[in-house]
Image (cartoon, rainbow, N blue to C red; front, side, top):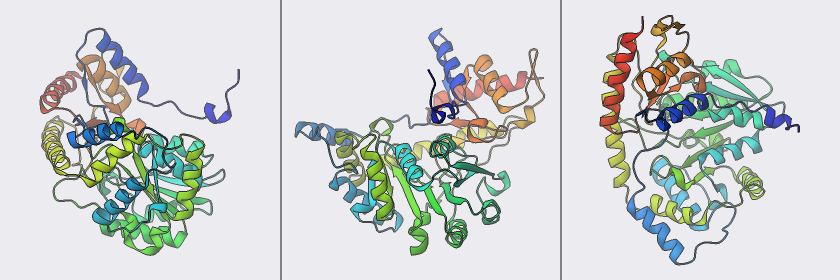
Length: 397
């Protein structure tokens, strides 16, 4: 039985072997501290769950419009106006089964075989695979730690060719936590407008920012760049609703229609009950978001102190999201038993086996000098995990 070339071309996640081994150890009775989870450890706020229950009680259990209910799309329009100084109509909004689904739909309708899609590295793990599934070619542009792992206009210009079709931008970033300033986005927008390329702006972590930083959507910086941008967001991270699977995209009407048409032949509408919950999340009280952000800020401070307190570890301060992305290359060449550590992937395996701590190797994000730590865990768990990690690193010779 032969699989399609499309299926054969999908790369397995570099995190799978670590995750599988972590589950094996846990099943054998080991206590694993998990810094790999990419979701808030908080429960969905009660008023959002209550809205879902009320929706079920009134019989909202049928198909909805493919692009989402009008009520939710109107709530999303109000959210964009309130939070991002962006004006959209409901026919420019498409609600999907998570922000990942929104990103997939956007890449499918904007890119095709022969096109190049610019992806700054470090990048979120699914960007490259989504580009390849569209038959397009990902062009990875490595960014530098001294620039906060952010793409600069010269790097974008240098990566452009006549085949360039799309730039994928992520702010706040997974895995680095970097946030683009308004001025940095304006400079990138200028290059994109001049080159006539699309921008796919992944803004799903926009509510989780720290130290007085501000989030700006590149689409808000002028009518020209707005007409070349698809903005993707969702309720998963901001409202601890990862399992509800509601993401959304805002785009010029012809692009939004194409995304909805594509979705009509895959998932059709997202879950009706989850859509009602998302309306409550966007329209309702926002205190739970602020409380979650405050807890993440305290955890960030703690894990940064611990990571940077380990000799040789250098961890920039993430301005947003809930990840730390330290450079651990100072430990390359050290010995672990009979093995020599030569990459962050080796270190991730070492920490799992010796410290019983799960982290994600940076190769999953295009940088194998770093490890990604999620601090979506309690301070007690973070403290225990960092104690183990510090001891494990100290044992390497």
